[in-house]
Length: 519
Image 1 (cartoon, one colour):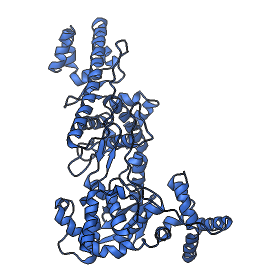
Image 2 (cartoon, rainbow, N blue to C red; image 1 turned 60 degrees about the horizontal axis):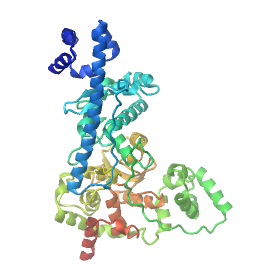
Image 3 (cartoon, rainbow, N blue to C red; image 1 turned 30 degrees about the vertical axis):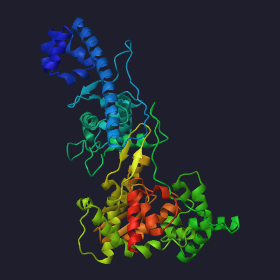
Image 4 (cartoon, rainbow, N blue to C red; image 1 turned 120 degrees about the horizontal axis):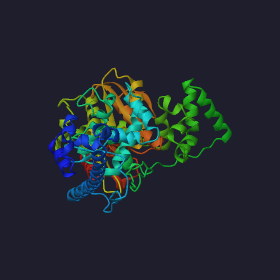
């Protein structure tokens, strides 16, 4: 028993229970977690027991109100900091103060004091208070709990976290909550670090915060369609490529439908596949732009678009015939200029990348691609409650080109990617399409375009990036927010595709101007 508990018992006129609390090793954290069965077992005398229950009720109610005050103050501090640094979002924000009426029953959720003085609630009680909560607790207590049970637990806990702290709790609160999860459910503990890092790992100067709790909070903050209680949010989207309309279909509708049916059921002969894909491109491109269905559902009608090499490039050539070969025509000269410009601006990117001073032409071509997300500004997501999240340089690089070692299990990689998409939805960092390379960064053994949970092989990094850029236009999807400026640079500086000129930031314009001066 600590001094705080001893003082509380004296304040409540229950010093007679000191020996009982000492014997049961009840400190202040344990006091806040006491349940009626615990009190009944510890204090068999009715008089002191009911008095203890009443005083504990009042303590928890006061603690609840202090939690809300702390949460609101933290939001105010965050807004002051953002205004001071010029990074604040819209000036209006919604803040509500939660409190319990004097006549309300004892709060359902007990809280603990963290080492930073922030308040915390019992994860176990949060889960048990939900529908089928007891079953979920049982699942989480088993050896190797299913990922589905883990995701449900995170959803419930984050929902309660937002109720108490808002959708932008402090890093201390999130860290303590992660520790509380693995304390209540030891089977969820990681084998590395302190064991809670899978739920929350604080960010550093070169890496944003990560973990299931952080990803869920980001998902709620950014997703426009989700409005938890009184918090309504909008998401800052990367600019969608301005795609010109596809050419008119000159074939009869019946003839096109027959070709599409044949393509759905045949992969060979390849020459015939390519020819029919070219003939059905106007219809396919129009459907990809006008359909209200999800992209995956639309592509079920056109499976050869992704599983036949060169089809993305062929469709892009139909949309932009003069722009299609531009990357290959311009990059051999401009890759060196990108590296020179990067060296003149700042050497900060060198702490992320190790690039030899002497490079072959092929190595310089690849190195310049990898440098882009480090020398160009990363994307920023905003919400109407004044919260702005800027991606780190490492985030941008990962969303642009993901580097993995030789021997990486591609099916397993795609499975993990799909799990990330299911868990985080629009907030998944690696938004498809993107590029995956295996082996040495400058001389990779294998290169892939990752699109719609498929790994499409390509012969080189530039070939994979060329296909990836063209996939944005063919599939009619937005650039990944984290690395959008790298794609905008390639769009205007290499492919010379018009559209979205007002989204070109000053750094991208400066790099493009350097090309014009040296030409």
